[in-house]
Image (cartoon, rainbow, N blue to C red; front, side):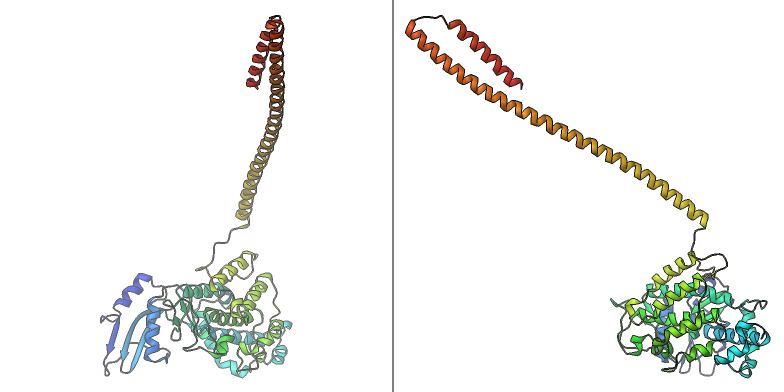
Length: 449
């Protein structure tokens, strides 16, 4: 089956890969028409758990289950695609390849054989039998041998693809629990994460923290796993950070694997037991270039001692996207074409900034107009308050005048009546009538106010 087979063709094969259904029980005397790959060694229960997990996964960077079979006491898994090699082997191939190139070009001062031997480079005699296999792997992976750094393309493009794969697993509420280079398969079209025999499906749980179960490979243990403490998805991120660090080493300091191992002297060269040596790791790497420097900063967070200080897989994807966005032409891609995020060009980004500035300018003008309207409204309100106070004062004054007039009229009326009684004269009758008319006018004026 080709690695370029479509999803539909894989599904059709998975449904009936031998003409006897998706699962086949071969008799003890039957010959299994398959070439056996690696022995999983998880036991029937572990393999059944792996089968159930693989059935629910579908991602371009996750190994795919095609079918299963039993043969005597063994339970077999038929997986797709067939890999050229795993990432662990590929990293060794890169080391072998660079060592032979450096031996052939000793005039390259930066990577002289003498320098390599000072950092405990591998013995040339140990490399000789491997070089043919290395070149075969490179050829099957589609790498051209016209450059000393031909392998960099695969490493450069694997960071983002691995981050996407782990983000997908965690979104599906699956913890891998044994992330390491040998569980990442490489083939011509990309990479696939494999070996879910120790994985945990926590979809039925409220959190991913567990305290029991299989723990993976000690070299890539997170500190909390090594200490037998409760651990969750952050432990996967620590293991992935260790893998990223080994990949980065081959990118910037090829043929320094032994030197890097020597800087992890404790606990069988595990990362978590030697975190106190980190500053020496980074001195050996001596990272140059903004993209790889930012990548190293991300790796430092991934291998933080405290789980809550590590990024989640989704955050890692976002961070790698931003890192790539800051890169220039010729910088490492960090992503394969299959997963590359849409990063806007400078021209489109500039156009977007212009649109935002125009929108901001429009909103600023609207705000200024609103402020002017508010100012006018305040002035109108103050004017109305002044007019209201003036009218209130006039009304009070009129009321006082009215009261005084009433008192004067009442007094005048009393005096007039007294004079009329005493003198029997109606001399002031006309004046009284005039005062009454004037009072009526004042009352009308008051009502008008």
